[in-house]
Image (cartoon, rainbow, N blue to C red):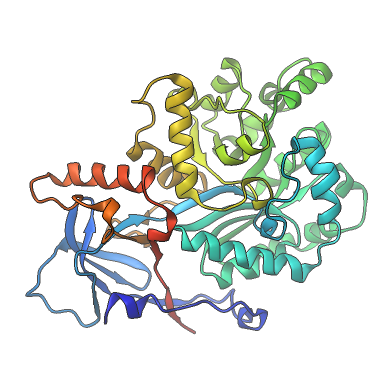
Length: 433
């Protein structure tokens, strides 16, 4: 089979095809021959959605089912979008030029109030296509109409967390939140291994202390992620200090939330943090998500304290936020922006090199999802994508005079700083059932 033929596998968008999305599927994937992995030309064998072996390319060896990549593709572990509102593909670019709070209250919330379940399904489905096309195969999503989000994500053969975002108003009215509580455990069981359902407090300014603690207890009892917007803007930080006497992360710690959630805590944005807050997050092995493009477009700030967070033991991950503020779901672009921001704001070109920012977008994300062994090692679930290196910008990356590690470094530099996501090819997952 040729590599070109294999890529012709569009996924359906109609809801009828989600009839059996919760059933366990057996994935059928072939051996990829003459494929670059970690700087070496290799033969990669995948069986039943697992990486079976990675061996030096051997033209004399025969395989039952193989695809010859002709040395024109490089394989990499799949990326994880650790903070997004997928259905916001329906609101791409709306409200441009507004800061966060006016943008939310004048533009986003009124539009969201008009969304139907079918709208959310289509918005999430479009988002999944966009993410897969740029090498992202897992997500950490926060929105509503979660039944529809689950169907869309399963149909796209992706995995991750689907969270119902709640505010104080949801506790006081009959709606999706109260309905979900009554059937949460049964719905979670139906999701299978690929989807983790949870309930997420929107933010400290939209959810009061009592309800923040209630949701911490709820997620702690079930070992679920606690996904929340935190310290996104300077105004949020100043308001918390004025109302509670301490900044947001310290406030959550005093409420006992960090002790309960620990490595299940996922703080989106985490842009305005002081040393004390960083130390608290590190002591609890928490996760934070940097969303550089969204932060810049909304004017929220640019001095994300990556080095300090990393050195304190915080697991730093990468996200796009929703398309209404980031305009796309391209983590390749987000990696470039994150790396360049760190170099520029610190006036140090050695900070956050390509291999490290790629780890932020991949391994760190899988770690935050509590989904180990995804990627390109024998025994891993086969979560990877291919990059077409038969392009001018990748000239020289396979130079035999270079060592494998030198080739890998050169390739990642070209991918992150020079390439665009149109060089990426997602791997179709052929399944039975």
